[in-house]
Image 1 (cartoon, rainbow, N blue to C red):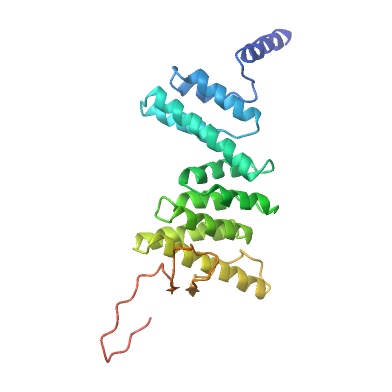
Image 2: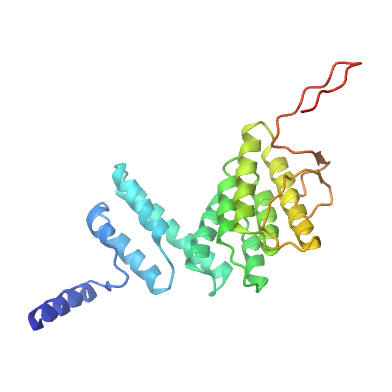
Length: 256
């Protein structure tokens, strides 16, 4: 037992000598990242870990780049950008942000979200957790929702205490609407309005908000706080449904 303990001590000392700790080193970096940048990536990872920042996105980027045979310089530049964005996310969201929130915030920044939107979450001083909203934000922007529209909508939904189930439904509905041809900004505004109306109805009827998500039918008004300032007019109806063609003159529409 003493020999095993001694060997373990020597092993730990070796890691410390090279600038790592057993708590923060990642075996994948040491075995799967391009050996030409392995030490630098491990040092960046270790530095973030010491700051209390979960660096999984950075590791995944380095592993993917290596597997695809990417240039070491390009991979390392990407790793450094991830480190920068993770630190900036932590700064914007505050020291009480969870590791998942910091990672999601970094993804949102990389998607083009304005930093002031993340600061709103920090300033709210709410116990509500925001990782789901931030992840949804980063997901819908590449689908075609303008970054400022997505960030305004998701920050407001988060501050209104939308549940994870509602945010997942919002994301799925927006993706489906865009796939059906609805402009991204309009789809997001309309679906967000539906979430808020469902929450309002639940509160009014004595139901816990987030327990059920109704179909987002109704109107997105120009003064709607969810709407982007560049989106004007109104959007009526369920944007996720395929529009019915107009009925011939003189005939009634047969409804199911």
